[in-house]
Length: 279
View 1 (cartoon, rainbow, N blue to C red):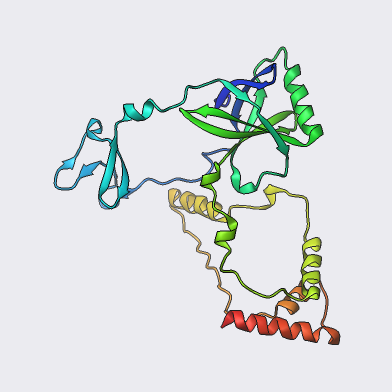
View 2: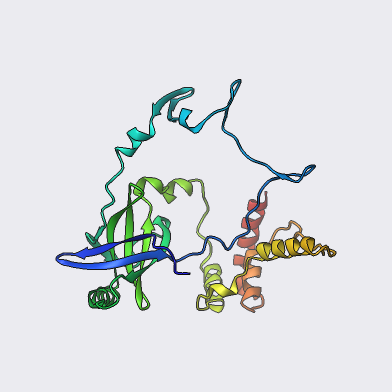
């Protein structure tokens, strides 16, 4: 079954207009989801919208409320909100181009594949794809989805292109604020050198297939076991015991090196630092 388009329209670059279709690049149905069941009767639990001391209410009696302060709301009707929605313009104007690595990963939200919507004439599509690839640039613009404007980034991707929705600036927290309480002196250079060597030793080409969702696999096995009425095998995980780890020694062992006399001073510093963290 062909994938339903998330958005369709035209990319506009100056006087050039390129018809495209945007389809999801991810699958949403791969994960297991549950319903809540009333165990004594086996009936599925349903939810109702209720008002305390009144009971269930109809949808046409419900409005949206924005809380200004505790207990004080501004009420908005759906028709008032609908008036603010943007017109579903079917054009993606590329208004700016940036380097492929200039956008912080925190801003990226969802990826989509971009396909040419004109099978007979996709020359302009290919020209834009190759230009983005050669310049190593990403095109930025905005599209309207369900009445709301969304920032998007367009980049070359294999034989096609990829569009990624971006978060607005006020939706992203500043890292300086999150990391403000992290303190500590600069570690010894030889410790950093060992860490770098460990990173180089474990550097591989990215292959997402290497990483498995073991929880999801175990969950599927449990469901199949219950469905087939066979005995379920339980696997217990052992927890590591708490201990103070010598950081320098751990790094050295990771890269296959033994200790030496000239490194004792750095080891001692590492132990002191580890003890402080443990305390």
